[in-house]
Amino acid sequence: MQVSPGMKPQELSNTVWAYATLGLEPRAEAWTALGAAVVRVGPGMNPQNAANTLWSVATLDEIGLLLTSTRCPVETHLTATTSV
Image (cartoon, rainbow, N blue to C red; front, side):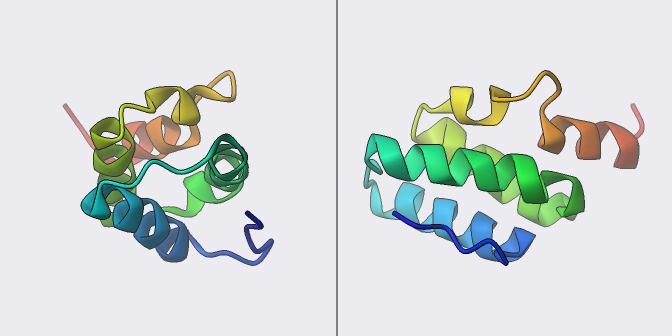
C-alpha cells in the first residue's frame, strides 16, 4: 500500500476509520505506511481527526501503530489542546 506523501490529517483519519468500520485488518505493509503517515501528520490533526484515528486503531487492536515514535504525535496534540 502506498500512502500519499500529501495525505492530510482528515484523509488519514478517514482511511483508518474505514478499515475499522468495515472490520478489515490491513496487511502489515499497510500498517507500516499508515503508521508513518500518523507520525507525519499527527501534529496537524484536529481533535475530531485524532479521536477518530484513536478509536479506529483501538478498534483494530493496533495501538502499537501510534507508538512508533518516542512521543506519539496524536498524544502530543491532545495534550496541547485539552485541559484536565
